[in-house]
Image (cartoon, rainbow, N blue to C red; front, side, top):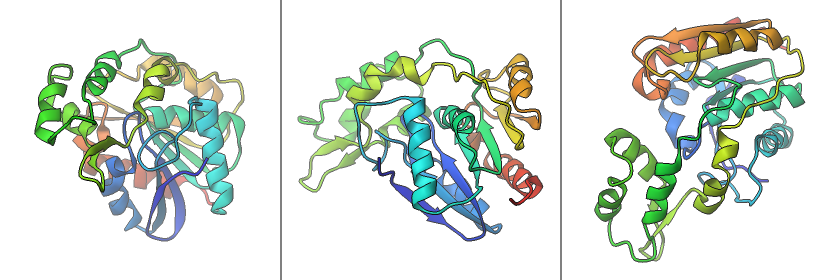
Length: 258
């Protein structure tokens, strides 16, 4: 599986994974600022997202394998790996299967399973017929019937793009994501002790990460610590970007080079 990626800066490597329905664009601004502090940052598009290849197979095991192949292909040794939401679960899955990393940053997600909560998004995405769509405004009007929050709506509609022929298409594989919404919210089984440091970052206004989630994580990642970003929701990098960058850079400076 070939993953599309964007590379910024030079120095010690940081590999960044986005959340479901996202792409490398979502974290570009904060990653550019982090790269400016002396890091080589690789921002990846997950399979079935952005400009990466598509597949009917969609699981955390597959996405962890994609990450492993990417690191091997690009000869990236012992990076710090950061993942937001779905990307964070991919980070945990990867760390349970592989050893090529020096540190981990998991952003506002826990290893446990979550109740399904993407059905309204899938219904809204399916309601937009790209074969007959005439404008982004029309897409916005249709989608607003399903997703009422304007910020969330704009985030999701970033996946809609103009084709060379003047029509519209999606940068996400909606049929596959619709089929595997249960996989996205599934638990990551932890069984292996991981000694490398881990930063679990959560937003104070989010609710995705509970105190007990960190205590459970700590039993398998004894060098883990948690930071709560005040005033941030689930999208910490968007709602509190300066604090997000500060926390990431502080952790990067703490992680011993391997």
